[in-house]
Length: 366
Image 1: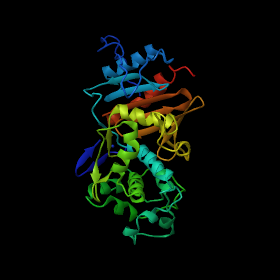
Image 2: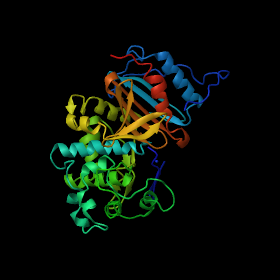
Image 3: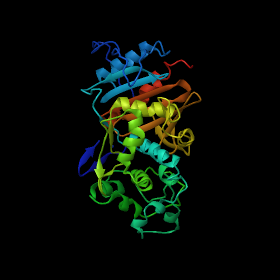
Image 4: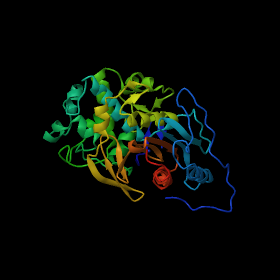
């Protein structure tokens, strides 16, 4: 979630506040919604969500109590019930996704896997024979698989911090072939044994999609994921070789498109009667592999295959997370999807607070 990426051609930015009861509401009331080709609409109350509590949370966002949030969207039962924009953000503007990109990359690996072109058990080296011999090669590096990259258990001797000289900082600033940079990096552990959040590993996973399908990740995404979802206007930060998309944090798309990604996961890979991702892939990749790897707003967070997982009263909350407050939340038991964008590193967890303090307690179980 905390990733902040800086590349030569693009710069991507990688607690409830106190109330002010004496100040007037900036604009009371939720924004009226209109059904579009993308989403049928409803209202919170019709979908059994407490509209008064949602309205109060939105008013507090407008007032600045949650920092620099720029959008909040909620869908329940396949209907859009909240769509709010703040701080100059508008519906048609693509927003940085930061590490939400990793979760999208996991879906793209799944689409490639559906046709048998890649498997979780495949050794990473299989897809990069042109890069051999790798630097720092040993039995650990030879054992590295696609699953190890997606579960953040690669075994690489890596630190995702942004301190000067860190692996992340060196990769972002190198102006070099990102794939070779990561493939040549030294190992520390046997793959599959320890969680270590590594954006470079997801960049390599994106490179595997390109190598396996013969279509660069962004082109593959456009035809196999975004096209079927009706998503356009997407862009990626790019590097070497040949405009390689930054699969770990370089995606830009609209908040409505984020909500579609969440709805796709909620419906186990289906959208508008089309099976885009294999349901078994969605179920597998949103299960817990590493437990307790983070604590956000006092809640333990687990990790699957490119997705974070919370618990709420015995229910799973699946999440994609990016620096500065980019979020997609999926709550299957409640048929609920929520997305949020932001531009405030100090309040990057604001949407998590709103989800657990307001949205989930306001939602009646089906």
